[in-house]
Length: 205
Image (cartoon, rainbow, N blue to C red; front, side):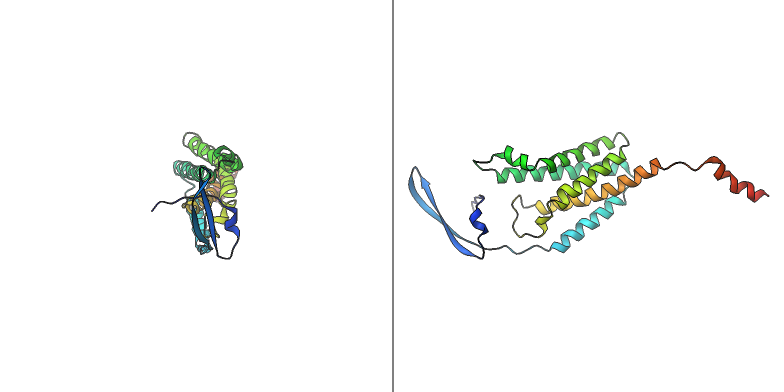
């Protein structure tokens, strides 16, 4: 069945009511589109948050593998960027084109692209702190910033928006922890040689 989408401020007037929109073709009324406005059932918010937290724990536990973390960063960044771009396309109108909609989502989009770049760079060079910062930004800018999709029954963007946001939160938070742990281990000073030999000398006495 053909489906048409458009943004209509009148849909905010709840509770449910009937509506009609006349269709004009060459200045003449070609027909009327009729329907009703009804609130969609809210999703299971707690399950989405639980999935995000569990995913973050799993990614954080993978801190020993730089290649895996780099792959996670690239995939998560691409998912977030794809969702942002598609959302901008769906929200575009004759008054506000795709460029205007992307400008409104500039910082989340820049964050997603930055995570892809950080993940790709980490595959060839140890940049743990960069991955950690990029992951934290992704978790905040996209994961927390767009967490309203976990509460609303109807999404303004594509239907897979909740999955994109939970991936951004889980991967971002996990990368922040894993990258931070890797950076801390690398930056921690080595134990002095004398301190390591002293217990051995005491045992000989």
